[in-house]
Length: 120
Image (cartoon, rainbow, N blue to C red; front, top):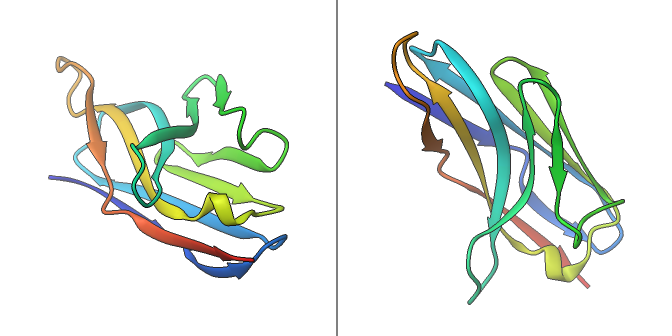
């Protein structure tokens, strides 16, 4: 069983900051990419940022310069969110592409999500 557990969501005023963390646990051989998606009210889920085990980053244009993704260790990823805007309000989900054994292919696993609300 693999679990991704997110923490750090909450309510913040516009211009404020929050830090999201995600920890993977269970039988895991290796994790390739870990990242954050979000789904705002009435919107489709979108990729916010991700990072590979080699340190290659992707950051969406909508958050570039405000959000910083980091790989704290092989099984943890964080998202530092600064200068938050009301349009950042969404449920944020952690995703990991990982291999459970040396011979298995990579599969995607998702966390349960954490809510971020930015008030104006």
